Amino acid sequence: MACRHPIVIIGGFLVDWTAYQPLATTLETACRVPVAIVPLTQASWLYASVTGSYRSLLELTHTTVEKACREHAAGRLNFVTHSAGGIVARLYLGDENYDGIAYRGHRRTATLITLGCPHTSLLSWTRRTMDFVNSCYPGAFYRTVQYVAVIGRAIRGAFPGTLAEMAAYQSYRLVCGDGTVWGDGVVPVESGQLDGATNYVCEGIQHVPNRADADWYDAVLTQWVRHLE
Image (cartoon, rainbow, N blue to C red; front, side, top):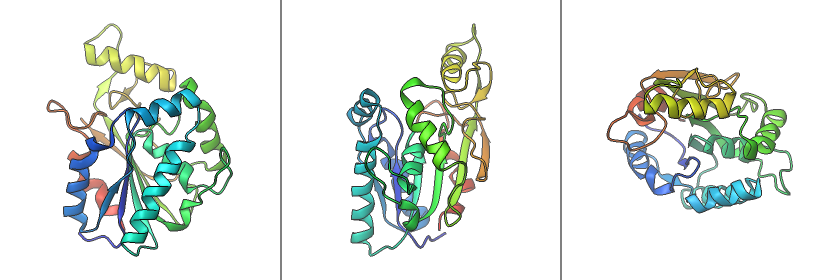
């Protein structure tokens, strides 16, 4: 398939942007458009967690978007996001002032795809931003943007259980309050879905990219890539 608009990838919490280079290469081949990655590092995310603000992440996103649109003479683009990168994108789309900025990115966004994004979360350091996003821009908020939310269903949390089940239990409990639900090993299925979006629950897909022993969201790329414009 061929897309009309460039793609910008926003990665997840504590994952260096270079981990998404294989996905970028795959998307460039499949969609035949340029793909840029927002250069978020572990340090970027640690700074955001310490300050409790995503402003610095939004600034890096805006710089990447501006460069992609300028270099490719693009008026609109597609976002492909992983984990908390989906919240950064939803913030970037918004019209409301957040910590002194509002980029109004919905005006140049065709499609927003979230992969394993916790659209709801009880984590303390994310609560202020999460509450802001879900109160100002609930669900698939902007009608001019196509929203697609993809979540894996690979591990049911259990304690006691296997190492993977116990790790999932702890993560799910922190995100949604119940450690015994199904999810991708980090994000519960319910949290990974977004009201009003096109939602996919994908069996066997786990949260962490580039693991040799588990399928990640690129394994079901054919299911969600067709929504990119």
